Image (cartoon, rainbow, N blue to C red; front, side, top):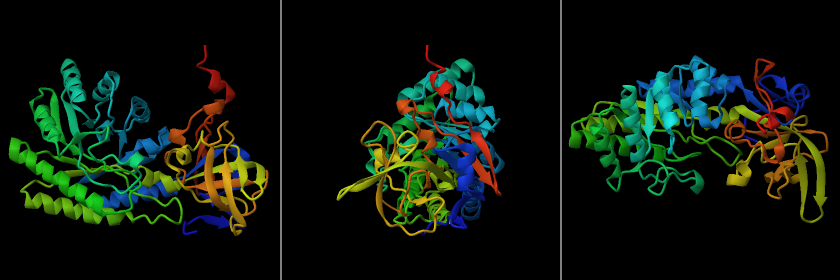
Length: 428
């Protein structure tokens, strides 16, 4: 296993805390986040932006993992955040996150969300379509405000990733297409709108991308479009948001590029294209989410039944499943797993890890190499910090597990698990 995990006396340790101690104190299933890993990743993006580009802002993508504590950490590390809902925005507001460093995304923002963004003083509202732009202009007028806007552009870049998570091509629910002239028409309408302040443009070409070239090409296309806008309208936009999508290691099959490996070539492309087109160097924003919290997270489960079907497969059932990690049933996402208290033992076979939801497809992985799993033992699923807690459901009326943060041999609860009373509190 290429992943850098900490094993002491044969047992997995997370942020200096033994997996067995975490399970004993907080129960399972349990989401565990390592604070040092999160901060190290935030600093790597922040420092690479400063080193290779200069003026810019790293915005943590909230959808990967959202709670009050992650916003506190992002703020303390000097990051901005992007939010995609009133819930995410309100969570940031609850911890006094500086709203001028917030980007508000979404392809179907409600009037309530747009109004809240303006009331809170969000720094950038990313307009996705003309109806939204027009509605925002109207709301801002009634409130006596100017709405700071970025237009989401589809640059037409093939991100070489899963079709469900490609977002930069023409056939996408997000943004304005370049090829059809839609993007330029949106720019002209934004410039003519009395209550819109057009700051710049935004793109996002996909997720879990391991190639650097798509990001470089997207940067060239977007800066070129900014130059076209200047040529056609005389308006020189200041902001260029290049989104996120940087890949992480889920298994040994994945080969992520170091953060600086993205920022170096992308920064060069932005600077060169801007200079060639007589454009002022834009203020660049990026939006890493998974690449900040993904590998910082581990989910601990307790094994229940181990059921062998001779000649077919052996099922290892855990006390969680698709409710706390739906990514396998959605994307067939693979994860490294290990026996938490026998972490150095070599696998003795390949197993199907199943959840306890009443669905045949409730699986966390198939053909997973494990070391002779037994009932009552702890199973650790690695790299679950992104899109696990944030996508969790209450299917079969199972509560969402708690989240703990570990650092320097200590653990603290940052999100309480849902109790039985929590599950019925909204019932009438």
